[in-house]
Length: 52
View 1 (spheres, rainbow, N blue to C red):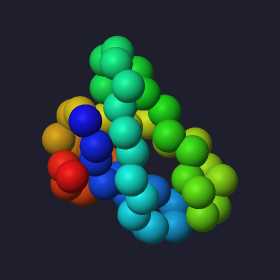
View 2: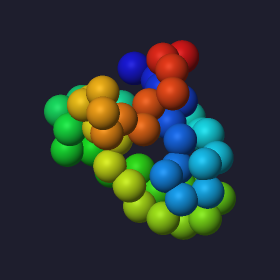
View 3: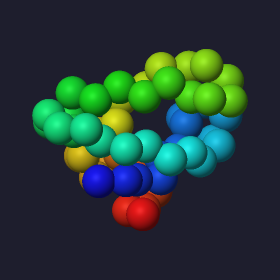
View 4: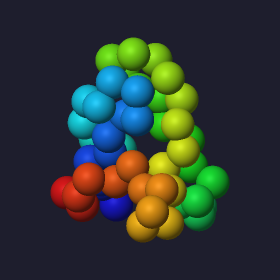
């Protein structure tokens, strides 16, 4: 499953591909600023912009 996610610090969008497991435990590193952030499935905390 592929998603577009948005960094909470620099607001850049990037692609994220989930490879098994639970999405609530997934962590992504921003390719622009280097910050690590969680990819939440919770609608209030989500970083997911859209499904690709």
